[in-house]
Image 1 (cartoon, rainbow, N blue to C red):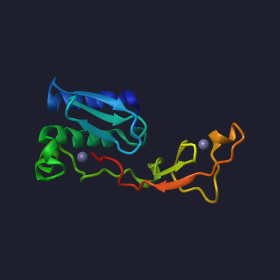
Image 2 (cartoon, rainbow, N blue to C red):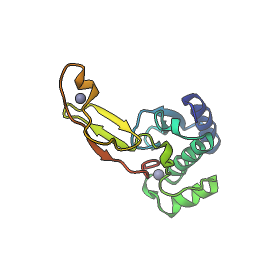
Image 3 (cartoon, rainbow, N blue to C red):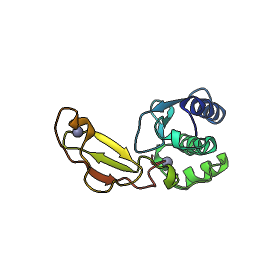
Length: 155
Ligand SMILES: [Zn+2]
Ligand SMILES: [Zn+2]
């Protein structure tokens, strides 16, 4: 599994090689997608939470997906221009990169009425009350939302 440190090394190297010194690589705290291409600030970032579920070659794929966005430009979206560049870079995935279910720990998002968020790999059986609220004696049930498995390379 890829640490933030390894991700910075892998991502930094790929960004330098394919985009040059104008672009930078960093980490972000996204929960709903693995990688992001920030066209305005010329940065590519990966989620520090979600790369933890990936092997290093999968991190490489995420970074290549985003580098293709940087090369193709914001207007290209996931169209042919983006796709051709992605393939030329060695990206083998599609519009999204799926994390195998066994590792998609953040598939289920639970929220209580006070806004506390928890993430689960599987939908918990039965009713769950918020642990954060329980600390001050409130019982607030969690409502669950399936975020799906195709959540990864969105954007
Ligand atoms: Zn709560
Ligand atoms: Zn994309």
